[in-house]
Image (cartoon, rainbow, N blue to C red; front, side):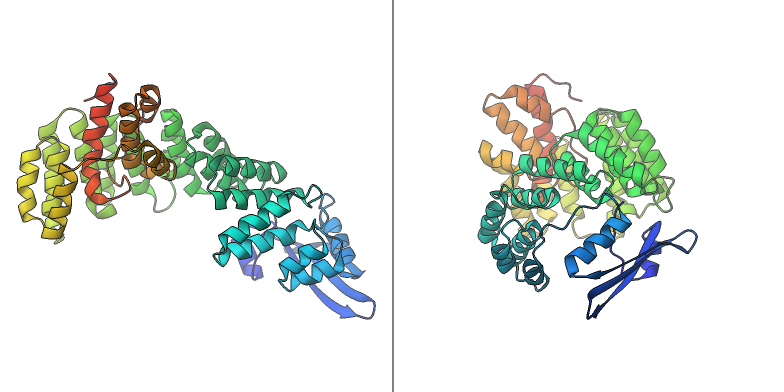
Length: 431
C-alpha cells in the first residue's frame, strides 16, 4: 500500500488512486476523535469505516492498524515530543525523545533548506549515532540526506537500497533508485529498477524512454529498441522516440542506423529541437566515413538555421569544420563569428585541456550519463596520460552523444577529435 497526499478527491482520481481515504477529527472531553472512511475509487463505495477516541498517538495508531495491519508505529510514543514536532520545534522534540527519528529527519531537512549545511550534517550524524533511533525508514532517510549533503554516491546508493527494501512498491523510491544507479553507471541495476517502476505503473511512458537508454548503456540494444518503440506509441512522443532510437544506436557505434532514425525524426517533425536532427544525422554520416555526405546533411542544417535568422550560423559552420579535421578552415571562418565568441573559441582551440586527474574525475562523476560526453572524453584522455589505460578503455566503449555533451559549448568541438584520438591511442576501432 502506497499513500499519496491529494488536495482533493479529484486529485486522487487523477493520480490513479484505487482507494481514497476521507477523514476528519474533532476535539472532545474524551480526547481526540478521529473518523476515517476508505472509498473504493472504481466503485465509488465506502469499504472501510474506522474511528478512534483518546490521546493523539494511540488514536492515530489504532486507525493506522485498522487501515493496514502491517502499519509501523510512529517513531515516538512521547506526547510532548509529538507536540514539539507538530509545532516544528524539532530541536526541542529530539531533546525530549533522542530516538525520535521523524524529528531528527525534519530538523536536518529544515537546516538544509536554510543553507545551514554544517549543522544539518551534524544533526544527521547525531541521529545516526543513536542505536535506538526509530524507525528503520527514518534512519534510512537520514542516511540518504547525509550522503547527499556529503556528495557520497556510494552511501547514497546504499541508503536508497535500504529504502526500496523497506517500501518495495513505492514507485517514487524505485525511480530514485533507478536514477541513482544510472548516474553511478550501474546500468543493469538501473534497468532492474526502471522495470520495477513499470510493473507498478505500466502506463508510465516516460520511464520507458529512460529504460531504453539504460538498456542501451548496459549493452542490450535490442531491448532498448523495443522499449523505445513502445514509448513512441504514446501520444505526442513519436518524434522524441525516433530521436532516442538514433541516440542509443549512436552511443553503441551503430552510426548508419543512428542516421536513419535521426532523419526519420526530422521527417516526423522538422521543428523538433530546432532541426538538430540534421546535425545529428551529419555526425552519424561522418562517423561512417562519408565526409561528403555528412557535409550535405550539415549544409541542410545550416541552411535551416540561416532561415531561422540564427546569429550563430557562422560559429556552427566553423565548429563543424574543426570537428571534421579542417582546422585551418575553421580558424578562418571565425572571422565571421561575433568577436567575443570568436576570441573564446580561438583560445579553446589553441589552448590545452587540463590533465588534472582529480578534477577530471570529479567532473565526470557529477555528470549524468546523457550529458557526460565532454567530461568522460577528457577524463579518459587524462587516464591515458597517467598510464591508466584499462580504466580509460572502459570510458571509451560508449560514444558521446552527437550534441549536448554538457559543459562549455566552446569545448563541444573538442570532444569527438579527442575521443577518436584516445581510441586510436588504445588501438580501439575508429572510423
